[in-house]
Every structure is written in C-alpha cells, then in structure tokens.
Image 1 (cartoon, rainbow over the protein chains, first blue to last red):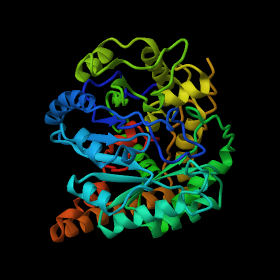
Image 2 (cartoon, each protein chain N blue to C red):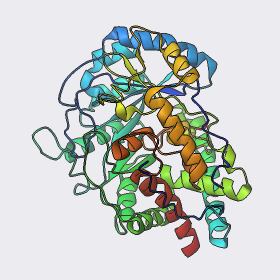
Image 3 (tube, chains in turn yellow, blue):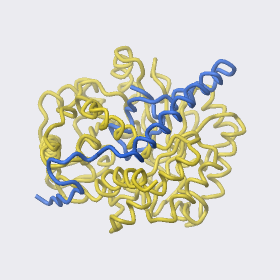
Image 4 (cartoon, chains in turn yellow, orange):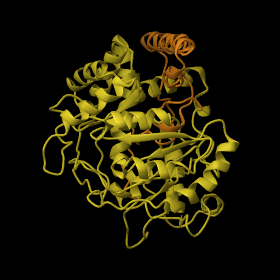
Length: 371
Length: 79
C-alpha cells in the first residue's frame, strides 16, 4: 500500500484555522511543557491581531467554517479585556481556546458564553496522573483545574479535554476513561507524551505496552461511548474506510498550512510547536511577519515556492508516502516530531509515529481481533 | 537519514484486514455516531445552545484532528 496514497500533496493556500498566541505567559509550569518562554508575559498587540484578521476574515468568507484558536502560553493569562480586544477584529469565525482551566471563574464563563468560544481543557486524569501539571511554586494545579471545570459546568458551557499520558501501559487506559466519564467532557483527546521543544524527556515506551494501552482504551470506550474519543474514533473511521476501499479519500488533498501567529506577529506554518525556537541551520522557522506582509501572501508564497525547512519537510512527507504502509492513516510524521527527534525534517518514522499512530491503529485492531 | 522504518506491516500488505470482530466493532461505532447525532438534534431543537455538542458528535472528516492530530483542538468538527 505504501506509495499509493494521493492526499497531503503540497500546501493548501487557504487554511481551515489559525492559531494565535495572545501571550507567551503560562501561570503553570508543567513538567512536560514544550514552550520556551512560558515564564514571560509577552502579550500580542492588537495591531497584530488586526493584521491577522484582515486575511482571516476573507478566508472565512470562502469556507463554511473557519476557526481561530487561542493558545499560548495560557490564553486566559492575557486577561479578559486584552483577549476581547484581540478577538474584536475577527468576523465570521469560530473562536476556540485551549486552557489549563485554572483561571476560569464566573466572569470568564460569561466572557466565553457571550462570544460562543469553544473550550478545551488540559487535564491528565485523576490527581496522581495530573501531578505534572503544577504552578510556578511546584504545587499541584489539580484542584484549581477542577474548580475551573466546575464553573464551566455551572454555566452550561460544554468543554472538551486534552489528556497527556506519560505512562501508556495496560491498566491506565480504563482508569483514565472512567475519570473522564465523570469529569463531564463531551470529547477527549489523548496525547502520548512527546519528546518535543524544551521537553527532552526520553519517553522510551515499549511498543507492546503502548499498543495494549490503546486496545484497553478501545474496550473502555466501546463499553460506554458517551465521550467522543478522538484517537479511537479516528482509527475506527479509518478502519471502516479501509474495509470499504475509500481510505485514500480520508486525508486532505493538501497539507493544511496551520498558520501560528506568535505574540510578536511572526508566522510559523505547518508545525506550531516550532514557534519560539531557533536553529543555526533553519533559523527561527518563521515564514514572515504579519506586520510586514499580509498573512494570505505569506501562506500563498510558501505554498507556491516552499524552501528551507518547509521544502525539506515536504520531501520527508513524500518519503513517508513512499515507505510507510500507515501513511493513509497518518499523512506523514509531523514536522516538529521529525525535528526534535531527528534534528532534521526529511526523516520518516518518529517515536510519535510509533506511539500515537502505529500502536494506536494496531491497538484498536488488536481489540477487534480479541473481542 | 535517521529513519527507523520498522512499521508493523510488511510492504505491500494492507494495514487493515477484515475480521468478524472488526466488522462488529465498526457497526457498533456507527450506531454510536448515529445515536449521538440524533440525540444532539433533539437537544438542539429543545435548547439551541447545545449545538456545540451536536456538531462535535457528527461523524465525518475532522479537520483539526486529522490535519494536526497531536495538537490541542477537540471540536471534532465535520469537514
């Protein structure tokens, strides 16, 4: 099957979303965080948001839905007034935040509800599994996270959850899923911890353990599928398409450029995790600055004439297409994982591929075979 | 090139092969997706604020996850 796939060729000129960094600051100091400037409060000027909105508002007219994702740092650390000012120039878009939830109170809930902001929380399960999420004094943030989630529930604001799993093995998955059923999220994403950014932990997971983790999670979801479970359902949709012979149609025809705009207006395409880093060979990974060049021109120029690390990454995607039987499921190893694991962008299989793609799909299939 | 091409499936073999267990699992998943969408439709009629859950439950292509599945977006929206 390797080499057969037709999706993910080149870069689309119109993204489906942009990611905004309203501040570099995070009030937490999680042990696995990849962000290099999270202790510094560098806030995005409104002029940067306005420049982004000029392109985004036009893109939003071209597609049924367009999303602006406020990330960080901790986006709520920018403060309500400033975040409101940053959101104001955008028209016809859906706003999203990914938050650690510790700052959410009734006032924030009103803010989120008024703007119909879609909310994703970060929590890693019960208190012992969330122990790496700590404040700047090193104290667990768990109770603050629960308070924020309770405020959202009190206000009837639905929320999704993102869970970083630092020890994927049998026995963990069922416990995690049970926690999130009680937690009240409508959707759940599971990120197996990655060696990325300033997080240099050597994960070193055993393939069999990770695969068994995913199989167990499949069984837990199957027993009570109230939560939309991102990875498992994604794998099931792929498996269904594969049996129907339509799996080559699942991947986008082109790579989404995924523009991330840093607080100072630099644009990092294709891999937001690279923002804030510099490399002697690749530079700062930015493709331009919205205060100098309109965002749509930055994206169009890269799509038409990719060079530097992006050209190298595209050759890596083609290598994945040629070599890997899982390409139709995955679309190629992510740029940041290639860089942080291999030091370059034209390598192929990464630890992330093995833990979160191959073992995921194989674990789901293992469950189906064993059930 | 620092590749570690140790994928689980030999070259030329499909990753997903049919089995009774897989067919049954996929049928259950499909029922879940249909039920979610139907339930969300009913909630939406009663309470428009629930549209978020409805859209999140709808099966289909999900841009954020599939374009960037390790990132932090969970709306699971159809494309």
